Image (cartoon, rainbow, N blue to C red):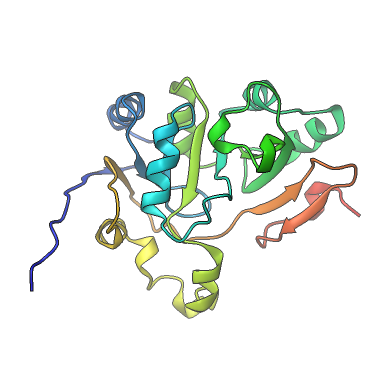
Length: 231
């Protein structure tokens, strides 16, 4: 049987607590050219790309063929100021955001005229945004001009199906190993993989919908909820 050709991905080992500047520079150059990167985050390994490019969305769908085409991917921003430029952020939400960001909390906010089209929800009304506390992503965002489109390498349904949230299984899955993640990719390709020098277990973010009159927790990722101040 004919074997599929494997597209080799450049893999760079990067320090979690003090990311090498030369590797951050390489990542920025790849993002500037429209490339896709595999990077560690506080919610596990993820794919990131320039949110200003339509091609990023197309390539994400190739990498995640099971992802519904009408379900938007989330955005990563460098700070709250950048968030306020691309989404509606009132005083109440701003105060909550300053408590939980950076961190594993995705806010669904109302779009404004500057919201990247590829990240907007149905009829371009809402967008999911978070600010990462992982220093690798934070360093990339500090140097990159645009928000990043982000998606996990797998989804919550697969994690549940594989009993990943059972403690004994959390260090024995393909989605925590860069080489195995790259081997899983059969559609599309990534241009760079940043391999953390420490284990990167996967966790889902907590998602809160702030686009309506009353905030609603859409997904409880197991992170602290009291910090949100919701009754």
